[in-house]
Length: 187
Image (tube, rainbow, N blue to C red; front, side):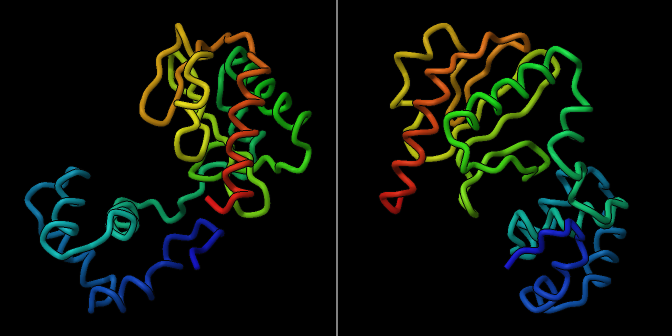
């Protein structure tokens, strides 16, 4: 099971077992590379030594001085990094959803605010410089609500909304309800 502490070194025993050398060995190899760009270091571990993306990232980021994967202790710490408009919109999105689905817990996962039921993620959100991204979990959620997304930038698994988005309560409820139906059906 993955560590929830954010401590990168918690993954070291598994990495050492899986790839056959102590992490110090891999750190030395990274130090010997001519190219110290993140992408080159990741490619070296993944392509040359069969590392998974997650394990390569753990070693590369540790080599770069990042000892923890955690940037935010809780959602409020995340919201505090946003401008006032984005923070207000994000809080409004999550409070709207939680008003309809009070069993959902607001947590930080992957350094972003997420709603989950027990250990299953249902909905997330992140902020970019000029917009916000709605991130419903589950397969086909965006297809399910496609008619409601007209005028918004829709990607494969996200919906881009303006930083000052007027929260569409119906859209949010429909996305989350569909995800919960999937979870209840075992999907």
